[in-house]
Image (cartoon, rainbow, N blue to C red):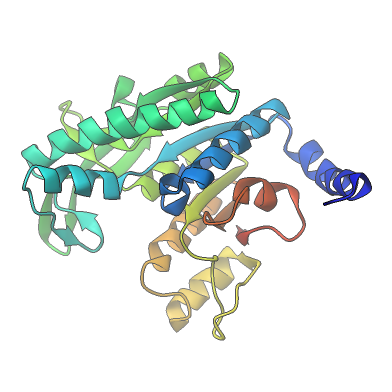
Length: 283
């Protein structure tokens, strides 16, 4: 059993980070194993509440791709993807809104509340918060899949300033009021930029960014990350995550993190310890 003095040393290690990030906004993209494993779900809710009570201002943006896929399968609707984006017709969009804006969003709000905090669920279409245009990928129309062109931070700020944790479903709306499915990483990045967040944290199902030897890289600059993409060191599904991080750093976010969400208390380890639980990307 860990000795009391060892626990105290952990708190002392965390103290400089608590001081540095007090009052700062941290946008967390929540998805993957952290969202599906029951023990990880419980620890995530407790971690978010702890962040809130020690003075940080967490904002959660969640995914829900597997849940959407399961709902569509039960309805006998086959899912198709282009570049990792779900082709979304009108029927599919109804399911997306039902799952993301309803079931998944409510479950995450409940996780925070079970952890002892207070949360309010929002969707990106509330008040025109996440503004989008129709996304075309390599000349192919993906249907109601949106590309984010703007974020109105006021609804998020109003919820946060009232003492609640905002929990946001990545659903956007165009200038005609039509709703669109939005990639959760993209939505989280756009929200972090609009809020001038201190940090953007993407929870993933991998360790973080790996070097040429397949070993975790604890930290990178955005220039180094872009060079690794050009060299092919960073590839496949990690490319859009790293590009998302580099883009938010260009627009005022102080740091971005790609974190292994399969680790218990990954959020706390990444923010408050020297070692972290993933890869830190800075300007």
